[in-house]
Image 1 (tube, one colour):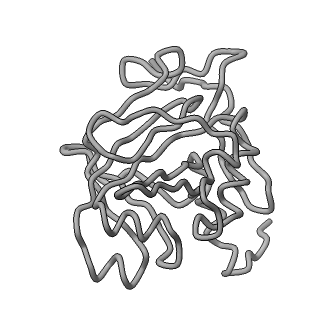
Image 2: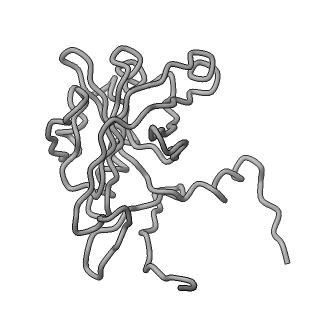
Length: 186
């Protein structure tokens, strides 16, 4: 049996990778936004893609600085994720403070990283002006990556019972949390 899916909602069949908080900074300004549309693109050097709408303050700051960070929040940051994803940085002086997010310095870029996340990717934009303007899609090289060692080590996630897990936005204020791992074969 099959159910037809409205094409306007078809992306939701694939869009359950981890939600990220995109942080950006330029000069004295900084911002944070939630994004559900990000993905890995290449291994060496590591590259990612993320959609950043041209009408956002984050886009303005990324265009100016050429860099951003992807912060991977957990369930404890879900309310803050909805909050920063629901309001424009153009309308607030400090979305970090209003959402209760604490930050710390990145090692390779000027954008801040967010405390309490399970992973962090520091990224530099690979300029693709046509793709950025036409599709709001940014390609970036990951120049530094960090993870909570209790949740990620030796190149793998290992979400132990009682530990934070990545969250996945599926629309309408609804998330699910990464579930239990299982292995197939040897």
